[in-house]
Image (cartoon, rainbow over all chains, first blue to last red; front, top):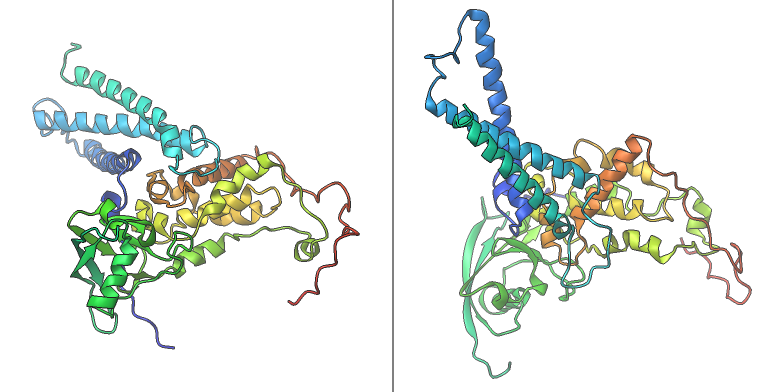
Length: 145
Length: 275
């Protein structure tokens, strides 16, 4: 029998951002992935830059390449990404261990899902992230000195 | 209502004929819509009055068979279960379910989903084959034990969860919400002894731990199955198994009481097996 030609309808990266109903957890998912990739990128650059020490190049000292306000802002964004990724990661670990998703229930319309059961955990973690981000901003702005 | 005037809604339908088209394109049809008409009714109107070549898959018309899953205004939904005026004003986009290949027009290729499903042994596994194939008694299960998996049995394999899953959009080998929910359904069944058999596949790099709880599967599920919940419970059991902390469980025994595994005297013998 001849092979039937098909069209690949996989969404690819657009699938992270579109398709389906948009719930709060979907935004948390996207942000988790984006911050994860951002931290990874920072990590690679960090390794490269610190590696330059072997050649006697110090890019981060006063008056050198990285001693500019834009990189200070970038450093703060890395801190924000870290705070979100870490605290959302703790939520995900708890959820993946079956904490805060509830037990199986009889599905009666309108359906209740585990998403609403774990929503308070998400809110608490986001509040904690906001506090850490604000405290970090206080430090980055130099208000503690 | 019979006397009510029809409203016109433009259906923007994805078309694709593998023998003719290099890529899918969108064709627009104007459909007179009355209160209560489903998207499936609208597609029938197009086929009967505007273009007989339009192809889609459907069967029961009542949200039971799971055949007519489509992307309606960007959301995976059942065409038979969705009223046009509930989701559309003047325009409605109708496309095939994403994350599946398109066979033609609105028909997705669901075979990869069912292959993944089958790879997780979605059936009761027991060592006493003879009893399983030729039962001589009932297996006792309390209502509480039934509750452990009942929610996950309502899955109709429509594929909406697979279409909504963002992880599946970039990882074709990810098993996906439907097969993993099915694995959890059987793992939680006290009659089953196949948890170890499913563990390798469910815990593989493209198994349950690829899910990062975006929750789309539970949002779009038309039957309230909550695949996201099932997958988290599955992950928990995989972790407990890995750490050897899972409670040992034997598949349940046959029901105690009259008979004790023997056919009851006042019940006629079953007909001879045909297979």
